[in-house]
Image (cartoon, rainbow, N blue to C red; front, side, top):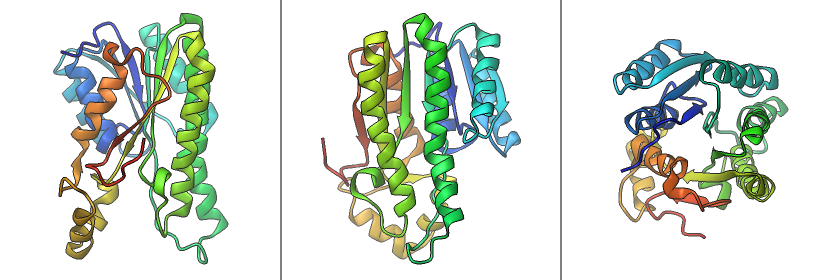
Length: 253
């Protein structure tokens, strides 16, 4: 049984999808403190918080645009003020927008880089500053199969997710000797608000299912489970790992 009693965690993009599912699993596992970060949907964040509180966790809901370093620093400082320490960061927030390369604007490119990759820098920077004096902690970064095999019409997205994998390996080597593990979860297709439009199209859904050996799209909870594992003491000797959760659609190691 995974037990996070006494642990505090920040989960970015936790008002919906994978982030929300992770927050609720952390609470079920006994996490003492859970910070639910949201950018726009405070009502959804409140519902996630209520679910977490029912399991006994102390919950802090914090607005922050994690692509802005000052927002992330305030987010981490508020968490430290409330809980006294930070044990786990799940850097999950991101966007996924279609754009053919010949039509992609500089603004579209910059937005995806800022939200998906600069946010990882900002979160890891602030979390590491909090964890290093403790000589303990774990960072869990959320990538994608797109970061491993690419994704047509989403080259900007794939570039950011590949960058997250490289950051995972770099930071694992850098922070591991100082007591902080850094790992990555790389989901394939997942049933979330972000993928709803694509998965609601019968032809697209059928094509997607055909490339997944398990024959179905993952639920958000099926991604949250591996995140919880990496956050637990069961994964204490795992560092720099990319944990693929894609039903077998991308086989690499």
